[in-house]
Every structure is written in C-alpha cells, then in structure tokens.
Image (cartoon, rainbow, N blue to C red; front, side, top):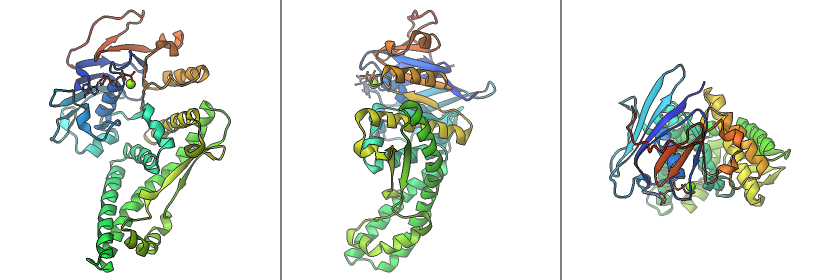
Length: 382
Ligand SMILES: Nc1ncnc2c1ncn2[C@@H]1O[C@H](COP(=O)(O)OP(=O)(O)OP(=O)(O)O)[C@@H](O)[C@H]1O
Ligand SMILES: [Mg+2]
C-alpha cells in the first residue's frame, strides 16, 4: 500500500493556533461553513509535504496573525509498518526548517521531491487559471509536477530562469553599446545547457501526460477526444541554432525570445482550445482532468499513489460527476476533500469516509456512528 498521512499538527498556521487532525486512508471529508479553516488545512498539508504553500509565493501569509512563526508537522505511514515524522517550520526572515525524523533535509528541492514520504496533487478553485490563464500558468503546472519527481529538474528550472535574466541584462548592455556581442557566446552556452535539461524533462512528460489527460476527460466529460499539445519556441534538436538566429532581434528587444520560458501547451477538446473557447464548466473539468492525469503520471513514475488535496471541488459539478468523483476519491490511497455541504456526498460514501468538522480553526472528528466526539484535539504529536 502506498504511503499516507496519519496526523497533521498545525501551529500558528493561518487561523489554527495549535490543532491536530487525524486522517484516515481513503476518503477524508473536511466540512465546515465559510471562513472556518478548510482551505487553510489543505494548504497546511501541502506545506508539510512540499515545504511551500501552493496558494501564494509569499510564505509570510501563512503565519498566524500576531505570531512570529508557523509550523506544520506530520506523521506519515510508509510501506511495511514504518512511520516517518516530518516538520516544516517557517519564521519570516529566517531560513525554512525542514526535518525528516528529526534530521534537517538536504535542500528544499530534495524535500519537495518526496522527502516527506508522500507526494500530493492539489486542486484549488483558482487552479482553473492553468486552463484559462497565461502560458506561464501552464508552464508552472508542468514545472511543479516534474519538480515533485526530481530535485534536479527543479534546480535546472531555477538556474535556467536566472541564466535567461542575466542574458537579458547582457543583451541590453550590448544594445546600449556597453558590451560587445562576443561576450554573449558564454551565456548562450549556459542558457542552452540548462534550457535543454528543462526541455528534455518536459518533452518526456507531455506525451504520457497527454494520453492520461485524454482518459481523464473521457471519464469526466464524455467521449470528446481531448489532447495536450506542447508548442516549442525552439525545437530541442535545433535549440542553439534557434538562439543564434534570434540573436540580433534579441539584442534589439533586450529579451530572449526562444527557449522553454516562452513555450506553452494547448489544451484541446475535440480539437478546440479550452483556453480560448472553453465554457466555465469545460475549463473546470479540463482543470480536474489535468490533475487526474498528474496523479496517474506520478503513480506511474514513482510506483506510489500521490495524495489528493481537493478544495471545494463538488460545488460546481452536477450529480453524476459528484458521484464519479466520490468513487474516485474512495479508490485513492488518501484524499482530503473540503466542502461546505455534506449533502454533496451520498450516505453510503460518507459511511466509508472519515468526516472532519471544522469550525473557527478547531477540529472535531466524527466517530463512525456519525456523532461528533466533541473533543478539540490540541495534543502534540507523539
Ligand atoms: N495568516 C492568517 N492568520 C490568521 N487567520 C488567517 C490567516 N490567513 C487567513 N486567515 C483566516 O482564516 C479563515 C479561514 O480561511 P479558509 O480559507 O481556510 O476558509 P474556508 O473554511 O476554506 O472558507 P470558504 O468555505 O469560504 O472557502 C479566514 O477568515 C481567513 O481570513
Ligand atoms: Mg475555502
């Protein structure tokens, strides 16, 4: 059986002062009214698993108001009865503290690529921008997925972005007469070297991801033939030539016009771009299908089923699709799903799920007969 999370403790994390939630394998439903802490809890799980929040680029936002640090700790059940304890601590202005069984993680990239013993696929309502947003939103989706597999990919992406920035600065100096064009060759080699690593990673992934996406769309949406189509601004095998050919135009503009930072992928239903023509519902289903494809891809690549953290996914779906999703979650190693309304789940689904009630940053887990234990758990993790 794949790894899953047994317990999560949040300290000064958003609206949780100190709360512990016990999670079960299979489906966990977080239920509560608006603004009680459902999304914050899903975010805390992602924070503990990846070392970063998927909701914002500014870590400071997760620190509880009035507190000077935030921490998320987890107990993870690994294969063969083994357990791992991990913690992510963050204090503004300080280096993040990531520990695995008490020992510091070697790097954030290494921690994010499975250091916690589990991986996650998240769905937040705002993720629809992967479909309807800018090319950068789609590149970010791909890069995050591949980074969760390999720390070397995450490193290549970060170093490539830096190299492009430096090349751009040099292009402007050349344009303004402060540098000669000869100095560009060294940077071009570096850019091509790092960019190739990024392109190779993406090229290997988009094929399998595309067919998994097609399957997911068929299951979720209907027989419409779906596809992902990656578009290269420079082909992998003609990359350095393309960069050289673009040189004078790049100098004039002061930016690098080809390479993986300018690529995109099209999301197609029946040959039609969902980015340009998708209805709200189609764009939402396409987003979900991409997440399902990401899950299958991670499973194929790692042999482990990643955890599903899906925020308020039921509310905009029709009943048939809600039923499909319930079964999908029940069949996963672990899914944590938030909702304001338990009626989105059939009774026989809830009987097989753990229901966690959330109110005002406190947690109450229903027992199997549906009656809340009434205990607000504030005990530290053992
Ligand atoms: N850093 C923070 N410190 C304290 N409280 C915070 C912090 N960030 C957000 N909050 C508050 O936490 C509360 C719960 O937010 P959350 O997004 O988890 O709600 P929710 O249960 O998902 O609600 P909804 O159903 O409306 O999506 C909100 O009132 C929010 O303002
Ligand atoms: Mg929410």
